[in-house]
Image (tube, rainbow, N blue to C red; front, side):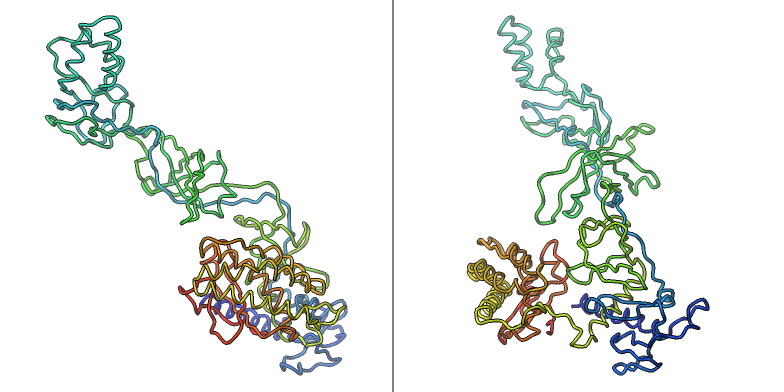
Length: 562
């Protein structure tokens, strides 16, 4: 609700700023102020014109002179085009830029942890029962080399096996050597058994790899059992920077990309590494997966530069092949659809819907709606959009565009009326089930969805102007038994947005049974990947019940009046 109210306030302030700029129009000395105006026109109600100065008969606003070569404020395309004079363009600081085909660059800021190389991490356990007589490494953090003695170990069983090895020959000696391997001796230690003094009672536990001792759970004189943990060693020569990549980041991340890493422990220094692994096991709860970056970690003055378990930040510099782009500031998205304003001749700016792709640091990928070379407004577009909203709001009924094709009568026949009523009841039943958090009821209600939607599209689409809404509705009408409420709400959102877009214009001309349309301003928090706003249909006298949140926020939303 707060987000929705903020949006209304923003639109109002933008519209007010536009009115102020138009009301107190700045006149440049170079402007054609000495010319005789062709006519005078209301900026807020463009259909109000006069051949002499005066005020708008609707709002009382002073009429603006329109000179030769200017198109004035005529509301084109249902009020979606705004025409400004040159002086007004200067006052509003309107700036434009061409849509270009160029690489889309983005710097992804990520956060994670410096961890050790898991493939070079070892736990040393007791292979046989025995006693630790002496520790050669007796503190955590000690640096050891591969094969370095860690402790002297006394074990009666191991001592007996060594004596047998010295006395045997042939296959029996070979079998005993295998037994010594099973008791933890290395091949080099087994070869040295033959020359080992007969009165020696101890064997040595050796480090299997070089690295840093990160765990010690044994002390001199301690008896240990088979399998008991003695030491833990980690090789810190190569470290792993581990961070989480979220669903919307995955199209940008590739194996082999360079990452610049910083850590508060070493301020001002960057460490360069490459992405070596992207975990294929996606975490459904966080909508993310783990990414690994390998970092060399040399010794500086006898110690490793990067410490274990440090917090770190990373900057992933990514780019894509050349695509059609516009500046991020050119995009206005206060509804499920994004729009830009295209600059045309004579100071006209036309609102144009666009389909967005990926968002870069400065530019946004445009999938459809405009072409390379089109000039889009990058500054002042919010004020222009506010004026366009006022134009549409105050348009006379004769100039307002309608959903029903002007080539045909807006009157529905009996078959179309019945199909429309069935469709509205279907949408209401599905939204009511989700509002009640009743998955079984939702699946029951949607059993006839394909049939009802198919008939509605078949009967109403031929006379419709917004064919895209019916095409989207036809694609969103497939429900085949859903297993959980989250999936049900995702499927319902696609259907409901198309349904309200398709059926709402009929409500304006009184061709449907009575129903209400409600809008939730924060659907994206319930439906992953959805726009912030989502609509649904309700019939009858029941109070507003939000299907996207159910009992969690049942009363979140606003009614959309006809």
